[in-house]
Amino acid sequence: MSDPSLVRFRAVVEGALVHLESRRQEINDLNVFPVADGDTGDNMALTLHAVLIELDRLAADEGRLIDEIGRVEIVESVAGAALLGARGNSGVILSQLIRGAAEELVSRPGELVDPVLIGAAMARAAQRAYGSVREPAEGTILTVLREMATSVALSIAHMEDTRLGSEDTPAVQNALIAGVLERALRAGEESVRHGPEVLPILRESGVVDAGGHALTVIVAGMIAALRGSEAPVVERQAPARVSHPQHDSSTYRYCTNFAVTGRDLDPGHWIDPLEAIGDSVLVVGDSATLKVHVHTDAPGAATALFDGTGEVSRLDVADMHAQVAARAQRLAFVAPQQRCGALAVVSGSGMRELYESLGVSVLDGGQTLNPSTYELLAGIHEVPAEEVVVLPNSPNVVMAAEHAAALSEKAVRVSGVRSQQAGLAAALALDPARSAAENAEAIDAALERLRTGAVAPAARDDGEGRFAAGDAIGFVDEEIVAWGEPGPTLSAVLGALGADAELLTCIAGEGAPLDEAGVRALGPRDVELECEVGGQPSYWWLVAAE
Image (cartoon, rainbow, N blue to C red; front, side, top):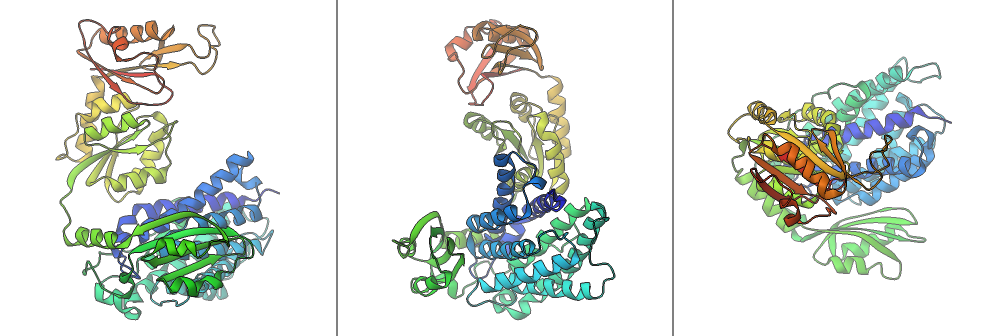
């Protein structure tokens, strides 16, 4: 039976992740408890990312739409993905929050997701999250989640419409759920503000709890997805005024995370042995799979505890001393950023090197040059500049890039670049001292003086009988101009582009059938020819003419 709630679920997860990514560094800079390692935003984003990947994997593997898979199967898979993808205290706690909410959804098959079910899911999520921590600390994400759940329960008690019927439209359901979550958000923000009154390390460092603040950002992203609008405003938090707070949990060096799979596993059995070699111990999961988190000086001793009990996998070890030092340096001295930088979507290791040699940050777009909005947003976030110009390098990327630009806290402009070879040539027009708007204008002006071409192997036989699968096809400005053997086809493209050009740049891709000498022999004699190696898939050569 089709369940539209599941389509909504994926949209809400993506909305939460996108909004969290837009404020990831802000959250990292708040992180002082239990260790000032500056990775709370990273860890919570990784957990949500694992959930989204699992949802898409389910749909791809099964060849079904998400609303055809079924709530029970999706919820079990998502809970497992969150568990295995979690890293650090904050990630593991978030995974348990997700598991608790998922368990409540499974326990009510056939029920529409409405305020009553949201309230029950939040209550169980809070219970699960508290249960995952041996010594829960108030003033943290645990308190924020509990007070959100309490607020929702009180709100439901005074609401006239709390249940949904089959006659209610998806728009009505979205609006009702968003309203409940907004009440939870406001309660969460209030809880975050009071956190320093409860937890001394927050008060001493002049910050709110990073995990609790991140939870409010996540909920704001969920509301935005439900309403199809901008996220509700969540107050921006300044970083800690004490860049290197000292407290007990900073004694151990390595944040160690791993999974254990086996039979008849008992999470509680492993707490004492792990605390004998470290602190900040979390062991969560079920009889078949455990996720272990511990701060220790001996990661090998932690994994060795499970020898003969189960298979250890997904080992992740982070040096917290290095993380704390890097965070302290970042907050003590923030290096001046350039005004404007650029982010290019690329495919191919050589292409990455070419862009980076020009000072352009890069995002791997995969074989199809088609990154998601949240990947683009994360890439924009990583560019060390106040403003950013995005070089989409493919028509497929433009819409997602514009969406990411609208969501970003930075000033972002999306340029008109539609190919990797054009992006390389246009990047020469970038000036870090100019604004993103000025640079985008300069890039678009450079594109007017540029022509592009390519040679690629045909993926299938031509319907008009011109070429067969595997033959070379030559393009100039996206129009097919030649086909047949690779050499003559490339020669035709170089000749067509070189007619009015002073410089040709030819970038060899994966499996290109001619070496550089062979390519140079085909170039027009009166035009300068630069040869590079991009390693891009799908295209043997990409050509730009200036």
